[in-house]
Length: 417
Image: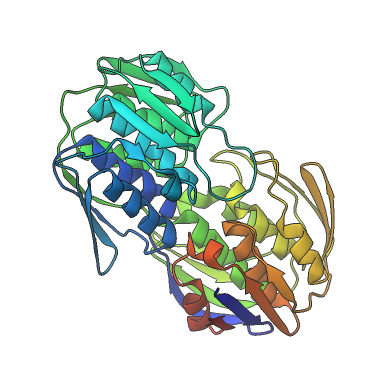
């Protein structure tokens, strides 16, 4: 099992390029199930979750071709199976995104209940209730969701809580449904807008993506398309935090600053200097980080996927910081590992209080989920001595060659096999 070794104390300097967004690429890949014509995606990150989704689609009969440089072509002229099996779905929750398009196109779907990071309860009941309103007959048996519908019908749906994958699943299902579907309390994340742009390029009629109300007017047929995936906003935020905790000055290229406005503004409050360009950021670490409280919220609020990295950063701030996690109830598992490195953190329910200006020392630590693994790498950049992060397969699910990118910025980091 691979590990990552980090020796702290090296400030970062240079340029890093951001990869395509994993969380946009996954629904985009699933959208290819809606047509029998080829769908070509560019700027797709070459990370583990993308390969897993490729295997899920292949199990359904799709031909998935990965090309050098982040291009993926999906052809689903023939769907040979309606089942997304447990052995594949158990490793990645986003696999549930095949449910909506498969049901819309084939009238049937059998999808294993999903797995993925153990960061809390993320039920798919919102997806199932919405599809039922659209005329689907759904049963959950033997660990599988089994759904049937001759043809889905448009409906008015209002989510009880904001769900990104729920919004995406419904948008894809509604694209081939009869009539108009209105999705209320929809997720506003940039990844939802990216999926909408692909669906429109395929011939769908989608309005309001990026707002809390999305309207989809169903059509009889969708065609192929070529689409460029947006840059990864969480990777962008992670490299801003890396520079802030390690020290130095870097340029981040091929990013969209507007996609992480809350992160940029919050990090500026901690003293980080950030200059914005049309597709790049210049980041300079402060002499002393200042504490600033955060509360995770759906977009455009502070993203839960940046909470762990921000917590690592605040261990080095000159005071006390409060972090409140409102999205997932079990997303503080990285706290115990940070404490092994010397952090002073007190957790009470969904709130963590971090006492800053605490020297960190290198230690052997274990990643528990994707963003926690990035948090531990960042802590290692600031720690005295050597940090070894175990279970880095979590890291590889969502970050493309993060060790190589950080080494290119001057970090003392390597991958151990």
